[in-house]
Each structure stands twice: as structure tokens, then as C-alpha cells.
Length: 474
Ligand code: G6P
Image 1 (cartoon, rainbow, N blue to C red):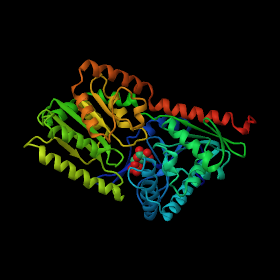
Image 2 (cartoon, rainbow, N blue to C red; image 1 turned 180 degrees about the vertical axis):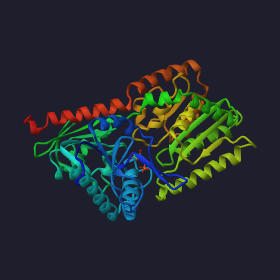
Image 3 (cartoon, rainbow, N blue to C red; image 1 turned 90 degrees about the vertical axis):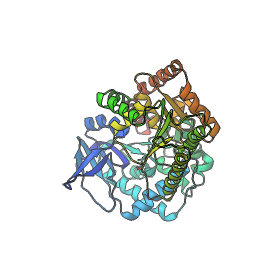
């Protein structure tokens, strides 16, 4: 029997679920804690939508299934495709290239070939499931060729694309041997969304320079009369959901327990990141370590808790980073710690949402210092949990979130002295100053949540159809 067609499709590299294998060997799925699925769930349920994505294991072809009322359609990847498409082109080429080449991107023709093959597989799957005139929303850098491939298969569809990571400056993007194909891939969409206005502008400039299309402000005019919009939609979080969670007695009690187990120091500083070289972990640990070494901070008075969630562990640069951080934490704790008092508590593990909320609540200072970041949702999650207007956020000016979170203590993560200064300011600021800042930050985050983000994007995508050449308006 042919699968049922749908009017709304989300396509992302990953399905929004993790597989669990119980002690008895029984397999179950758990919705992963991302904001995207929370935002899209209502739309998906309302429209009977489906989500197409990889389920995270190689060499396994699973039938579609339902979880929590969501229709999930797995796309298989072979072991070699995981290596070449996911670890290779997506995370060894595009990820560093799009993050200001903070490590050197690698360009391999076989990685590119795998990227094309896998993007085509996603596009074909979507083409077979979409009803006539359906809305399809393609997510992120792993799938930039899908919009064009899908349009060729199904010109009737309304296609949106959103890039969750930064879109690089034109000078860097030009390095990519397949730059033109990527631009043309994205131009298959009716609306291409970026985190920041700068990303949308970089894209429009490249389309002019490299593909030769005319652009006027946020609109690209294609020779066939079609228009493509390139606009910014800063992503957010399920702010109310996070606040509610952080108000539960369990989370409040757990936050106190965390502080107790740290020895109830005056200052608890926390960093929570995927273990990724874009996150500026060494820089922030060095800054904190130097403050302790210089005697400005007393190990009895302050603790830095750094959570680093394991990520992309088979990619070479991620392995190097893991070793670097292990060494750095070991050196700082070895040099500066005392029995029962280590300046840095380092956890290489991932935690459920409840524990994250408790950690945010336990932190006097949240430290977010990426060298480059599309948005950074951890910064927004921290703010959502600070319903008592207490706490301080130290935030890199190179995170997309810095554009909205103006009242954070903003830092340049490359400037270690500047970071030391900002950490101290955040720790020592008078409570009335902190409250004023936090109130403003909270207003920003609570008003601009993920629901508003998704609704705005989808509404503007629908308008793109209304004003498109199909209606004769060109
Ligand atoms: C970033 C990307 C996502 C990706 C996530 C986790 O947020 O924008 O597309 O899913 O990192 O990385 P992973 O490689 O584990 O999917």
C-alpha cells in the first residue's frame, strides 16, 4: 500500500527522537529535548504532518512509525555515508567553514559525492510523501541541496529552508569547491531563512556574484520568473515550557542539592555546551583558571561547573578537542585545587532537561563564550529559568543570541583579559544591577519564543506562495 500523503513535511538530518534499549532489551523511542520539535508539534499534529530524518544508526532501514502522535519517517544511511556525508562533508567541511574556519575545513570530492547522494535520498522521500501543493520545511546545513532537488521532482510544492548555523562571510564561502551548487540548491526554496540579517545579506551577495541572479534587498529574481526570499528569523526556545519546568518543586530542590554538593560556595559559574571547538571552552576555562591562579578568586568561594555533552566523537577535530580539554582541566585542578575543593568540576555527559533546568537554577553566572555560534539556545534557556530575576549571563559577542541579549555581560572570547574582567563583573555586580539586566533579558526571551519563530516563518512562507508568479503577480 502506498504511504499516505501529507500537507506538511519537515525534513531534517535527524528525527526528533532517540532510541532507548531497556534492560530487558526492549526498544523504545524518546522525544529528544530540542525546541524545534516542541514548536512544530502542534502544527504537525493539526495538519497530520510528517517528519523525515535519519534515526542515528548506520545500515538499518526502518519502516515509518508513530511516536507521541508524530509521524516519523526514517531515512537510512550506510556506514560509509555516515562517514562521508555526516561526519565528512557536513561536519568536517561545512561545519568549520560556516563557523569562521575556527578549525580548517577539509575538502574531499568523495565526501561531496556522498552529500549529493544522501540529499537526493531525502528529496525523493519527501517527493513521494507530499500531497499536491504541500508545505515542506527543510532544516539546516546537512540538507542544502534538498530544496532544488525537491523542486525539480515536485514543482507544485511550497518549500522553506532554515539554516540553524551561521551563513559565512562571502570571502570564506568562496573556498568551497562546490559553492555554486550549494547556492543553487538553496535557491530551490521559496523562502530561505537565516539566524541573522548578516547571513541573509551574505547569501544574497553570493547569489549575485556567483550565480549572477538579480537581487533587490531580500528578494532574488530567477530567470524563470520565480522569486526567492532570503530573510532572518532568530530562533528561540520553548521559553514558557522551560520556565514552568524550572518552577517545579523537584527542580528547585535539585538545584539546592547541586549547590550543596558543590560545598555551597558564594559563586557557582556554569557552562553547558556540546563538546565542540566552536564553543570556546578552552578560552573560558583558561580565563577562570587565571583568576584563581592570580588569587583574585578563592577556590573556597567559587566553582566552575563545565558540562560538555559528547558530540560527533569519531570526527578527528572533536577527538583532539576532548584531549585538550581533559589536559587543561587536569592542569588547572592539579595546580590550583585543594583536597575536596577543585576549581573546575568537569562532566563529560549529557543530561535530561530536568537536570539542565536544575543546573541553570543553581548557577549564579552562566558562561557562554562561543567563537562563533548561529544562535546559542543555552543562553536563552538559562534566562527562561531565572523567573526570580536573579543570576548573570556572560555571553560571547560572536553568538547570534548577542544581537538580542544586549543586557548580558558581553565578551570577546579571544580576549582572555577581557573575559577575566567580565567574569569578575558578573560575579560582583550589585544585585539591583543584575535584576535590571535580567528583567530586560527575560522580556526579550519570553516574548520571542520558538512558537513565534515557527509561526512567523510559516506565515511568511505562505505569503511567498500568495505573491509568487503562479498567481500572475510578477
Ligand atoms: C547543531 C546543528 C543541528 C544538529 C545539532 C547536533 O545544533 O545545527 O543540525 O543536529 O547541532 O549535532 P548532531 O551532529 O549530533 O546532529
